Image 1 (spheres, rainbow, N blue to C red):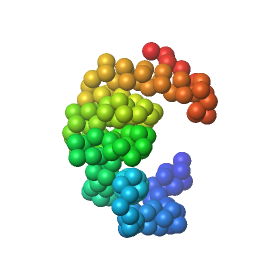
Image 2: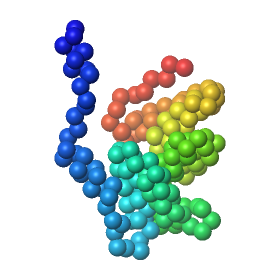
Image 3: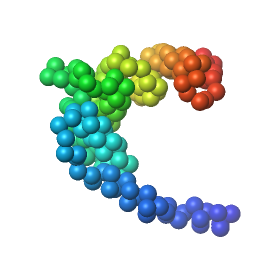
Image 4: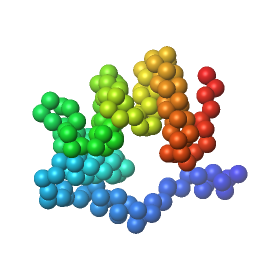
Length: 168
């Protein structure tokens, strides 16, 4: 058993190629364009790569920048911004707000994401954050709605997973 414990005590090894690719994506300069959709998606992806590297500040700033490019002057989805992309940005922004301790704002952003365009991760995060604040009824409700949503997508052959069984 000592040999197993010795292996478990060794520091993890990271694939240097993967780290280098992730770092390059997190350090990438924005494309030279005025296209807000392109810029919003760029900052979202760069922010997610920064999160993978533990760069919380850059992640937060990039996702907020993505939101700015994705919205109009009233904070609503810009007309040319695809609903699905906007929903992804809102979920990530909501997640960042929760990580900063702003649970109410984070949950509100995720609900706004669902109202805009339904994506599975939004229901997962909504349930997760309700559970984190101790609102078990809302967490269970979000879980159940999310399960129904995903089962419907599966039935329409839009997702290649087996049915999700609701045991509640």
